Length: 426
Image (cartoon, rainbow, N blue to C red; front, side):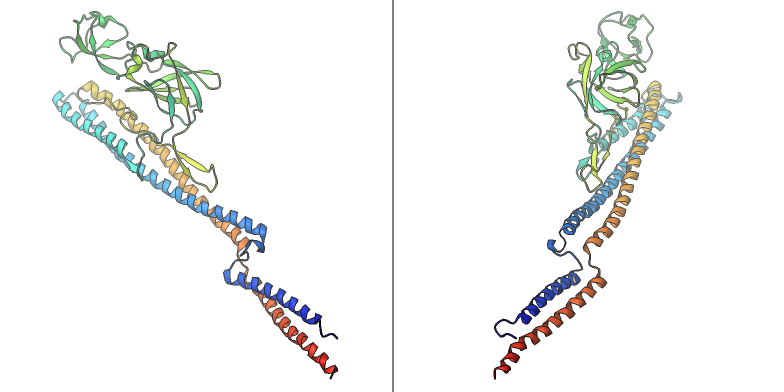
């Protein structure tokens, strides 16, 4: 029995401190609801929980992004629905103008409405926006570039691989064979035998512009008539591809200045060939124009919690140029019949665009549901790592509370032992 050093009390103090520390940790877990309150509680679990927390918050933001994308597509579809109605009305007026029971004066009145509807379609295309971003003017369609200022890429199929292509557009550099002002152009004829030129078909009689001219008609110098450009649809042009292969693309359609080229395996590119391309020296000597297909341009919606988890939404330009109705009118029966064909093609194109947007909307809605399910499952895993099991922890808490009380009682008794030793010296 010793007086200077009370080893028993020191043991009791150490036990008490340890039990108090454990009791404090257990109290923190019960009061916060988390079993990891500091990194020292579980270093690896803490690091994993922080990473999962970022993932959870990212998933919820991605869900909100997808919801916004759905709303954008709904808004765009609403605008396209109005365009559809306007095209249907133009189609009705064109059918009306194609009947022989109307005079040209009646057709002129119908054409006034047609032109106003065209203006409205173009206005919607240029001004429709969502959150300050224009959506129907081609801002979010696939982009491509050329070094020739007279040639623009008006669009291409998303299956076309990115890279540098060379389009042989020499066919369109001959103004006798193709005039980029459109299928019907006004020209001044300075050669008396222009009607005999097999490259053009004169559609205006010198004495009566409403009648076609007879083959071989001689026109006076400076005569202005309407000519029809030869139909280049179905002809082929060659395209040098990035993989060192050359393909043949067929001219599928010509709408105004936009030429649609179709090749094998879904290859489709729309090339806008401007008037200046027919001028001397505007095209390369070999007629080949270098085109860069970038694959960029669509609206990228972040639909996941990690980098690269995006959904591209392509929204093509749907103005009168994009729909191929730049030159439509109902001023004559022939014009009305031509308008019927062009409007029918425009309606088909608009239907295809809306169908594609509907597919995007379905995908985004599926993404929203998928993100919510992932968030639910990850929350359960996150809870398993971070949340306190109250029943288990309360058992631990009770244990340390009893041990702490016992340590306090033992310490009190250990501190009494030196006093008991002093009684032996009395």
